[in-house]
Length: 637
Image (cartoon, rainbow, N blue to C red; front, side, top):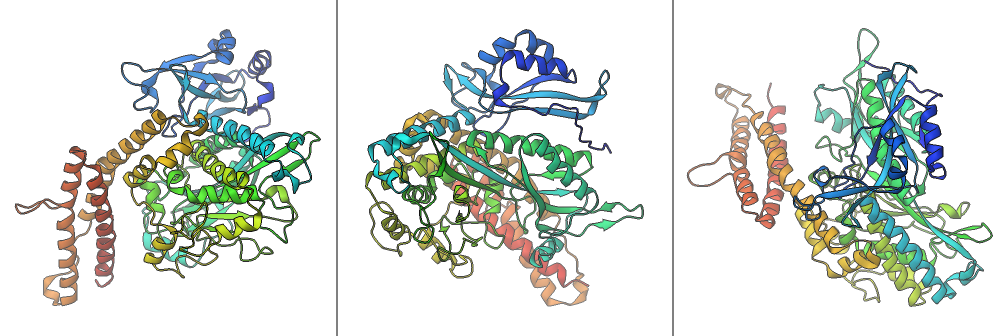
């Protein structure tokens, strides 16, 4: 097992103020252990590209790499309907506005310097036929559109600035800031996972924020320190709710490791935050691997226990020409208001258009597996703002929370709790800002006061309002899983989609939502169509080639454990129920096809609406049969 070593003599990052050819050249020449350069583009599925360009070739053509476009084959990125077989050329254009990172291979030591071989990874935009078509470019356009629109709105409606005691001309620029909190599971490979043990430990909160030990502690500490070297400014690393106690071997090492962890780092600009999250996953996974541990960022790696979220925080800050900063969401008087009118507008826009936004947050089978009641994951689009203006929001059952602190007005922000570690943060943030801007535009152009906006947002079910539909409740401070039935949650907060098909159907079937996303050219209809094709393609392929085979494997593991001679009728009844359920799911007969076969047939027939319905039925029956077998097995002596 390789040991990960932090070193003070390595170059970890080249910040954006150093992106000049002569500076880059000097740094790379001074660090000959950096042997390669990789251009990092993010396609619409959130995949990052990675290649190995020899550093000598990069230096010989540095002006072209820095200022021009480098061509590649479109087959290396997922842009269906855009980069096609007969028009597949895609260009990489380096983004000089963000930090560039050096990724080190600690298993490949450079012979001349005795340092690990490094690769300079340069975030890029993907360009097809002169148009930027990637995830990074969508977020860049969203930030630019938000800034220009906000500055125009404030100039046209200067009363919006009066509460701060400034005029629109006092504002120099507006910055959208965000941050992510990353949860993940780590385990020793090949060890058997006992779901019952994990479930009991979770219910008893045995692992939550407890002390880390042994190799997990070392890898976690190294990960936090490494992120600090990369300039992420990590704030903490700790255990999350999931996990079980590991076992101590005779040699003093730990085995049977299965723990859930979280690492948080400081906020940054929107584009830098999304880059940081992408690279953080790579760095963390590599550190734990070098210590013999598998780190997984799946949303729901183990069915029946807590999944992993990635809470995303957002706010907007205006920098004045005198250098002072004002949080556009913060109220002037914390005793009187929860939010400024702009903050209320942003909150209303996000919640009103969550059906549109949600397609960029929860867009995979794995992601939908996480969003289930009982696992501290939000299921319905509703917000908590705090029971009173003197108490902060503590409600972990809602999808969006307001975080505010009178002592630190700049920290006022929204915490979006529905994303997961594989959410495409670039597209998610772009959609968040577009939806928020729609609500802000309503609040500002209608001269709505903070009191009027609060009343509208907190309105009871059925109340008609100017902006928000009447058939929804948008705020609750109650535990939505204990205080509301399933039917009440769907009625008051809106029934959420439960499959990839349903969320994509809501995205493309909502004209108002499409208009919001395409406003300012942030998304084009071709990009929305390409994104939907990419997600749908991944959904049906995973369903047919991973989920169905995995379910078959699970069902085949359900074997009869009792003897007929035991004479226990309960065992017979329970086993017969299991056999009937198993046959319904996977056994074809002359009279009917199994559910699994019907799903495959409808995928081949491209009847995706029916596939979606059959998938929901399959999920329900798989949960039911696993519970049946658990009850049956418990009764066997």
